[in-house]
Image 1 (spheres, rainbow, N blue to C red):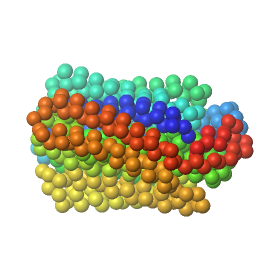
Image 2 (cartoon, helix red, strand yellow; image 1 turned 180 degrees about the vertical axis):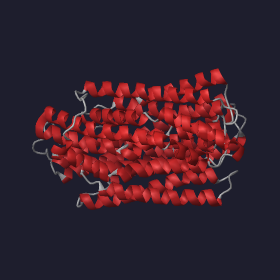
Image 3 (tube, rainbow, N blue to C red; image 1 turned 180 degrees about the horizontal axis):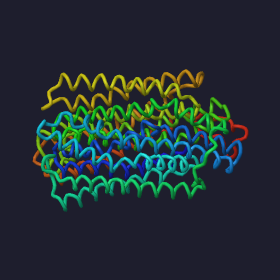
Image 4 (cartoon, rainbow, N blue to C red; image 1 turned 135 degrees about the vertical axis):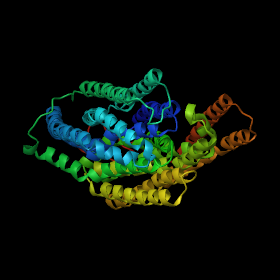
Length: 539
């Protein structure tokens, strides 16, 4: 794994996740803290949830190692053959899931509007059904997107795969703005025209379609734009890959079920889905820029080390990747935890700009600051296990994550009041769940790579010292905020300035402490061209 690949993934992921966060902000600012906004925000995410249950992020974790192994064993022609057969099976399943979503739309819509006041519930139910019917084809589109991403990652191409979701988010933003221009902004469900929801559904699906085309273009650039084919039953390698995907359904399903459950619980509070989704977008943005970006870049290299059975090479790659993950996650944790209130003040715009909602969002962002670190390590450890063809460990981790998150979310909904505390409890469920998942994968990986070390003390000390180096900058900025009287544009300038100076101090700390980093040379594995002895890493 190279630092350049991690930076590429992180950079383009920053762009896509920022636009994803902007999408939620625009929906909240335009549609307001209303039950109509709750219905739209939860409803248009259903196709992504269904695809996640079917395969979701597991698809790349399984397909990338399968393509790497096929390439090593039989060359490019064999990789194309394996990929086309996997695609044929998965796209058939995705089509069936899209039809099932459409058929189940009345039941799913009822779960999303059950807490709407009775006089508005019937109308909300009808609006939600219409939305689900128009977005159901996205299940198939997301399957094509995931296959395109896996194809690019297997050949070491990350930029387009990470950046293309930006177009989808921008398309949804344009859809919301155009729809609001035609029909007006915030509406409650009893006054919202049916045509408004139809426009939102069509525009959102069109945005996903454009995203799909871009990922297909990326697959074509690496020579893996293939026609889906049959014959998967006759191909043992394909059957094994599909079997690992099937066994890993809990890994994909558990996060999707968590998101769906949080949306249902958050719908008990007007505008609650907006706050939880803003928090979730911030969680994903930070974790994908941090540890998850490292995981995506590391998977091909970890898979290559696993193929040749070189435990020392695998351990070195894991430790360096873990170091990168911690480095990318610690500074955002400190900044967001300290400046959650001004960040929430800047995020809350339009109809969401209410003191109570800003306070709720700020409290949620503090929890997100810690959740992104735990979630990134959970994902990195899961991908490392997948590279070793271990699907049981990630499956156990996902079940542990879902179980703890559901318990915390249920207790929060029952015990905490809707007017204060409930939404923070729901976001805390994300944190507790990710911690449970991270602990599970680390314990499993520790056993798998013995006698190789799981962590490196020098790396840990370096990241810790670099983090402490930013404290004077963060402390001075916090003092300036505490003086009060700042306008919103002044808050933004101060936050940006603090971020830039903190990054500089952080980089300087890492530079100074890098001299004490480990220097463990690993032998060049036989049959792997282009590798050389490097600083505790692989080529």
